Image 1 (cartoon, rainbow, N blue to C red):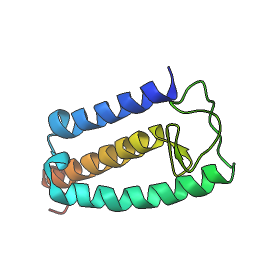
Image 2 (cartoon, one colour; image 1 turned 90 degrees about the horizontal axis):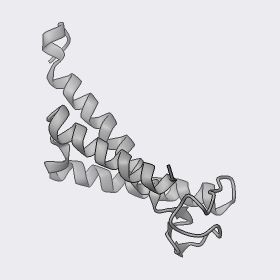
Image 3 (tube, one colour; image 1 turned 180 degrees about the vertical axis):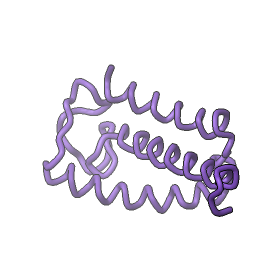
Image 4 (cartoon, rainbow, N blue to C red; image 1 turned 60 degrees about the horizontal axis):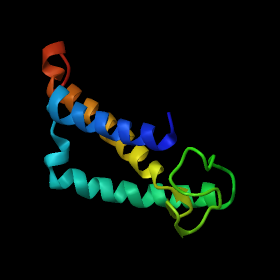
Length: 113
């Protein structure tokens, strides 16, 4: 499976977990999207540093763009493949959804409200 297919699958699974499995519905909140925007800015900075300097490299056969790391274009944003944004979104959303669900259900297990 390509990096692109994995990234799209991960994002779809994270949204499904948020919306239907855990029913936290973070993606319905303006607060979530504001926080996501802040995290995206730092993700882009980190990706630019790691990919632009050649510390992290991607196989051109498994991403949308080519092998050459460009600042913007050819399937890249701040040098990193666009798929990294989908993976970052999926990781953050799934972590926050689980955290929110655990917080909502803490009383059942004798934890703090």
